[in-house]
Image 1: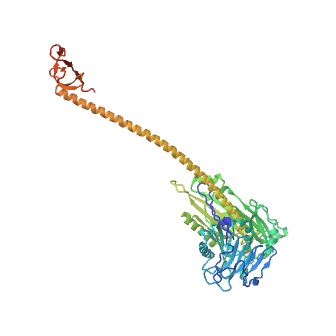
Image 2 (image 1 turned 90 degrees about the vertical axis):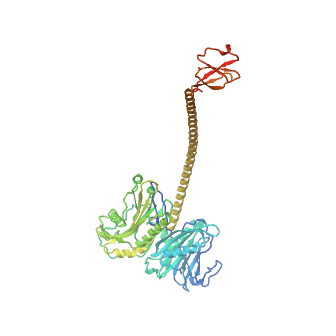
Image 3 (image 1 turned 135 degrees about the vertical axis):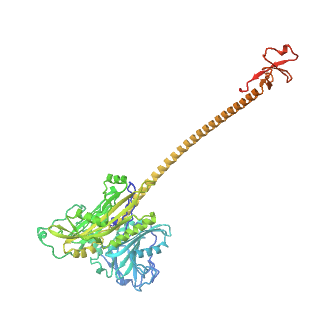
Length: 639
């Protein structure tokens, strides 16, 4: 399924965070209406595309044919290509090429216009490019000058009807300020020439335009393509007939393939005889009510298919189907995607166990093939394991993802590969030979918790595709089935559109929840900060008061100590000089007097005359002239 092949799923920490890049087949999810009424082709020979009111010269040469299914088969005038134009859509030839280089004189393309504003075009490419991805880059450079906020979302290699292609998905804002989604497909057509297909759909026309645009790629056919892909080309009426005849589609994937008759079981396999007559089969998505996959199989073969959802471990929906010949000996199968997890953090491992996720150490694609083959086939003998035919394209996808990751996050977490082997086992009394292919990707992510030990998480996705036949006939079966099943491993564009919308919705819901959690956390942080500020202010005030109190107490104690030292010095000085201090109680004056003649002192009022006696038992007022006041002795050690 293209989802599992093009989807990027990564787990960070103990949660399940999904980041996905989707491969779109023909049209992307438009962001808003596209106002252009035609394509953005610039022709090297005819730079002015025909206007809608012009009748292009020689239009009758194209001889459009009305199909029974409601579409019109458009044929290039020079037989270079043909494509079915949906009913109600119009097609006008556009002479020249897309690109700045030299264009052959007879080169031409086609502009396809819907009844509304949706459009598409197909044109030969005249620029430089060694591979389809180079062409998409060149077209992107031209588109970048026409749109603001232009971004490339995807440029991945792929296959279409056996041809190498590259799918580019872009977004931007046009001159009217409207968002636009563009899809560019570069096609390596037969004969060594590249073609460019481009489409644009406004959001308002998505539902109406999707079925028409989804059907067009399957009807595109180039001259000389029959030598590459021998499966019959579809026509509008045959598609319509086969889509209506879907009785063989079984939603119960567990239904067993009908057992062949006894005669068939005993008959030895003859030469490979797979009819080129085909029928279309579909896998419905019951959750969304749309077709998830649509492809062709041999008309008389049995078919079972289902789409599996397992959201418990963050997995994307996956397709699974099997087809088999009436005798059950020939067949092909696409197994459900295998996903496993591993982590160096014990907490993450416990989280995987809690969600019942598959736990397995990461292994190489070769090791996984040897691990998976005995799980799905009885006692198989595994042959030489080597790269599959599309291993290089698979590696290019891994490299492209790593380049985008390196540009955005500075890491290249994706590894893996595409390998195959021919295995043999016994089945219904026959020795079977089976082409067994494994496509694997492993994403290694580093925990983003700072100041913690370095830990990593590994998430591995593997898909298994098989084609079987009795021994000796596998090569012939591969030649017939591989081109026929080229589109069997991809989901339909309409399902991809719905899947993208679901991803966008989930991303928006997760972002809204994250915003609410962030706002709540910020509010709590602000509340805690305010409380902390109040606590700090209170603590600071208390601290300052305590400091001031301690300082004042210290100052007071120092003053008392200084006063005591001064008094002690004074007392000693008085003692050493046989002096003492006396105070006049009437005037408060303190005088220093000798105590050699006694310690009782009287002062004559109005003079400095002081009388001393020892003992102090005579009142001079009784014996001497004048008035005397008895002085008080002063202790120098007391205040």
